[in-house]
Each structure stands twice: as structure tokens, then as C-alpha cells.
Image 1: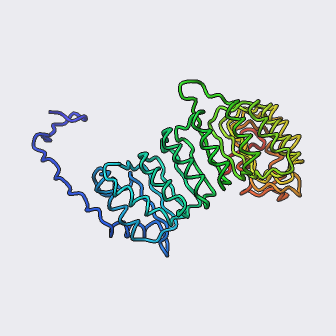
Image 2: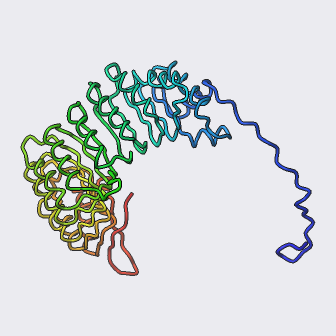
Length: 387
């Protein structure tokens, strides 16, 4: 047998002994206490459990009954303000264990059940405890919700009086059962809603219908924060939202519509509504292909948006001329706290404008995601990212 370098090799793979089996660590409540002291601070009110971290540290696969019972017992013994659990399968095989899990969440203010698999029985128990629960923020991001789960969640929203923030993004919500969520939000005290990635099920997503539901929800519910990413909304779908932004009673302060298809016309609807209403403080329309024409609409109305402090325009195919017009609207008395432009086109003039804004302290580096540098090869200034 020869090595790659042509020399005789004395290595015999048949003589290698199999590695010794490493006994996995014992998973106990005491171990959870130790882990919490690694990521939390006194008085240790924030609990988190990540399945991938668990399997890496313990050295074995997660068991949906035995290991989950340890977690529930830990939650029952502690007075916690936040509970965050990721990627865990919750079985309905042990009804008592499932009931105890629901009871352990009654006094928790912030609940995050991300990328979970939750049975319908859990949502039924959540509904039964709704009047007693003190939850302010509930996040189910990435957790699939069936039609029955959505109905139970709606009833929970109708009964609970403390919930302020609801995150049901990437939960396989369709254009059919989203109306139930919207009805529950409308009749509850929820002020912040994240419903990103709505699906069309077997048909293509009827964005006009979704936009109509969103418009009605805004008119009646007084939402303060709304996030609708990856929903395939087009320019025409922005009209109901812009009509609400026109009104003097508009309560919306943050609007996130990143990764949709609103293009330049949708940008016109939104900016015109923001300029006339004047209440919106944050707008994220990144990855919407608004183009240079959309950039020109932003530049036209930006100075009239009196309260707008955070504007995100990344990866929108805005040409150099559109970017330069936007930058030139930033004046000394600007209230802008964050402006994101990276992912569009820039030229040397863009770099010179950014240089003047930064040197004159009209903007600071922490308020914009681009900067400038002198390129000796070009013998001119150019834009560079600033993270």
C-alpha cells in the first residue's frame, strides 16, 4: 500500500479500534438551572430552550415525552417573565403533561414557541386559561397552524385582555383562515401584528382580498405595528393601506412590507399617504423592485413625512440618480435615525453627497448603512457598506 507521496504506508485500517461509545449526559432540572445562568442574568426570569443546542450538548436525540417533562417541571418551579422554546415537538400522548405545560405559561409575560409542532389540544388548553393568562407578547413564528388551531387561537384572542403583540409569521396561514386571525385581532387589544408569509393554499394568493382585510383591520383596530413580508402584495394592494395612512386618526407607527412586489406605483401610494397623514415613524420596503422611478417618488415626498425616522430601501434596483435625489433631501434638521440604502446603485456623486452629510454631521455613521472611501484605482470617491 502506497501513500499519496509514493512512500510505503504502514497504516492498516483493519487494526483501528472502534471509538468508545460516549455515554450521554443526564438531563435534569439542575442542568437547566446551570444553563440558564449561562445566558441569563439575575434574577433569572428569562428561560430559553433550543433543541439543536440541547442535542449538541447532551449528545443524543431529544425525547418528546421524557425530556419535555423535565422542561415542564422546571417551568412549574420557577417564576418566569419570558419563556422561549425552539424546534420542540409537543406530543398529545400525555394529556396531564400537556395541561401542566399550559399552566406553566399562565404568569409569563412573553411567550415564544418558534418552529414548534403543537397539537390542537394545546391551543384548547390555551383557550381555557385565556382569562387568567398575563401574556403580553405571543410569538408562534414558524409553527404550523391548522384550521382548528387558528379557530382556538381566535377564541383565545377574544377572551384574553393582556395580549399586545402577536407574531404568526411563517405559520402556514392561508387566505382562508387568515380572516379568523384578523377578526380575533380586531376584537382584541392587540396593537402589534406580524403575519408575514401568507399562503394561497391550492390557489395563488388573492392579494386583493388580503389587502382588503388588512385595510379593514387597520381602520377598526388601531394597530401600531404591522409586518407583512413575503406576501406577494402588488402596487394596487397598497391603496387600502395608503387610504388609512391619509387619515388624521391613523395610529400606525411602524409598517414593514419588505420582500413584496409593490414596485414604483405602490411606493407612490405609500409615500403620498405618509406625507399627508404624517404619523408613520418606520417604513421598510426593502426588496420590492421599486426601481429608480420609485426612488424619485420617495425623494419627492420624503421631506413632507414629518415623523418618518426609519426608512429601509435595501435591494430595490434604485439607480444612481434616484439614490442621489433621496440623499439630497436629507437636511440639517432631519429627524432621520436610520436610513438603509445598500444593495442599490451608486456613483461617485453618491459618495460625495454621503461624504458631505457625514462630515457636516447631518447624518452619523450609526444612522446610515453606507459610507465612502477614496479609490486610488478610480481616482475618485466611491460608496462602501457600513455595518
